[in-house]
Length: 345
Ligand SMILES: [Zn+2]
Image (tube, rainbow, N blue to C red; front, top):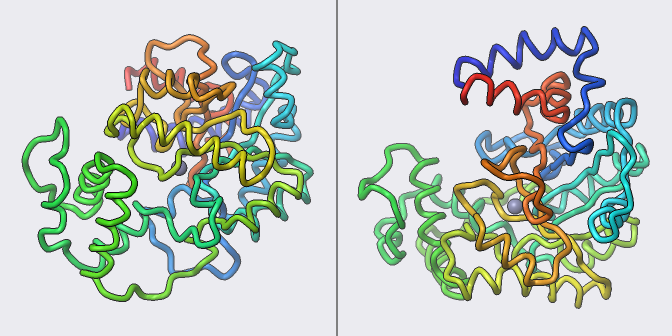
């Protein structure tokens, strides 16, 4: 796929788009779900290329929303809910817009674009956004801390990585992901304590642009909800769920629902799995989402191996910074997944 991807991105998809094929291909199941992780706030420049890959420029968001409005039927989250819960049919070529994590920039820089384009969105937030002082996503803060200096043995306090070779990966990203997986095996309270020890070891962090990195606090979450946007649940603390104990995975999925419902005073019917791919979750998490009382749950991938329709494993197109409009169209229409399967990637 390494050689195929640039070819698809630069040659095949633009040609298919020019020929009009991507604009009218029916997505699998007749509907599509788009997933964002926020936008770059105005004035943000000191980029962190690796972690920034999941955000988009506000202008790209606007173009993508305009594409959706021209070629799909953008539906409200409540329409999607009525389909899932009551079987009320969706219009052909329906598309639902979603966004994970609850970064502050969704209120300051994403919401104005959504409102300008009259596009509703289903935002998935963690329990951190039910508090006054939510901080950053712990695994993003950890990446910054590891970038600044080595953990000097603090990682040896963590459980060993399940199923991994016992070796130390060379590059920072692989080392970081290994530590994220190991820290995900701690319960939430022990992980908070461990992160406090890492912060103390690393010393004061340089100031980072708040709108890029901080999560919404409870007042800001309420503003988003009052602006007419729908709120769903991400887990309590965003670990790799498949590495949590049964009890901790249950808490992560069930308690975020209770906490967000308590904070907003309205039912939370949808869940989005953290990381949301086959290496971070599976059947246990789907069952827990059902048992927690959600009506449905979303993946962060377009295809789940060997799976037909399952309302607790709903595929989504994960939009990335470098995604061109023809690529966006190819992903939404299902053409990308079909081509990948055709070449065995
Ligand atoms: Zn997330």
